Amino acid sequence: MLVLKHWRNNLENNTSIKVFVYGTLKSGGQIRGLHQFVDGAVIVGKAYTTYPDYTMIDLGAFPGVMKGGEHKIQGEVWEVNADTFEDLDAMEGYPEFYNREVTETTQGRAWMYHLPREDYADKYAQQSENITVQGDTLIWNK
Image (cartoon, rainbow, N blue to C red; front, side, top):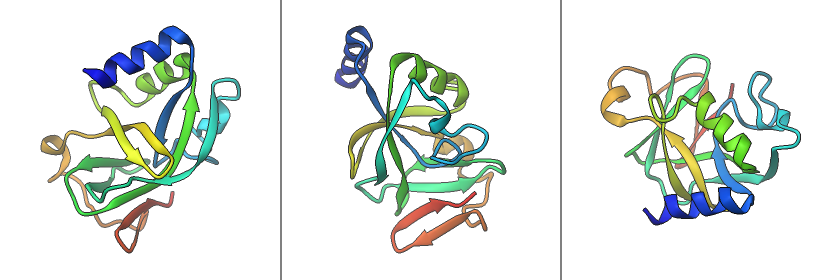
């Protein structure tokens, strides 16, 4: 509840909201990269999840991350405004497709979208040419 209260306060105060992205929303993403949200998103920097608690799967055109696993996730942290955050929720299909929660990253705490493990763990390959394993970290290459 504290996290949701903080998010609502950010919206009311019109301050930025940190979001951790790991797939097609990263810089350079031709279809949905956050760099295309000129007025609504500013990159904080490359980041990793702090704890190795995740699994990444290949959903075809984009990745999905599930809680529960042995890997960190490489991505980027962005600061977005309230309108962009709402757009991201719509793009990510929150809450019908992706869930989201605040996670610890090397760039501080940020919202991260993830899939419900019980719905996707057995349906998609965790090994893919689009996913690189670097030590304890998973990276989406596409």
